[in-house]
Length: 286
Image (cartoon, rainbow, N blue to C red; front, side, top):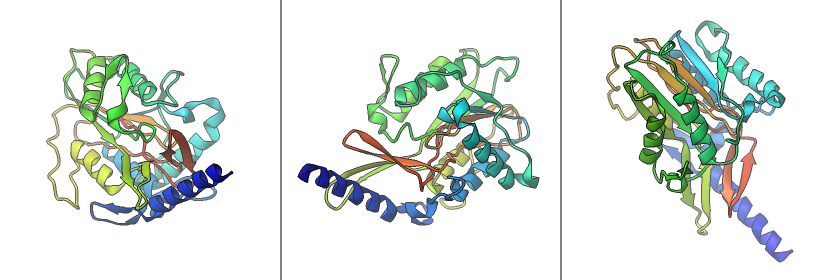
């Protein structure tokens, strides 16, 4: 009982630390601002940011869902997210995910998530995407884990760059493309020395990195937008605690971005994962 009480105390300390964690990058407030709506289980802030990135992708966007929300028993949550995104899109344009990754064991470990994204990229057809100019953005917290721990297909990715290289290796070699992972993850130590890891969601800092890659720039750090290729396809995947999706665009004049917009955030406590149903985290956008 004493040990159990100690674990509960540590969990409370971690929760309070998440609530008090300052966001930075010009964004006022703490993670508490991303509390989700009790009815929808969605954070309106993250939904709005995701919708703005989808709008950047242009009219030829294909969205591909690659999280557990693609499963039949999660259709009510998926519909709720799609409806919320529609309300934030220009002229309230109807929104629906255009495709789903095949079923697989990708819902509990970064290895499965990276492999699922890689399998999807490997199946890209030149009939749907231009042979040159493809731009791929992956937005994911990879189950609130540090990149140094990532392994996939016997490859010790060990870093964001290593994971990006793995995904590049899965694409048809004939394609000319740019690829970037925005790891929507944060970690720190509490004043008592407890380690905290969270799926941070689409904070302004992560939004900035995504928008810069897609040509949108950042109004806070004032970094110029990335040069847009003459022809490109933008693929985005978004994962919310249980939602991930990909958005691809063949619109040469429209940038694109990622966000993870569901209403769950999680952190790890000595190897155990906890879901915080009052927060929204951003998932993988590729």
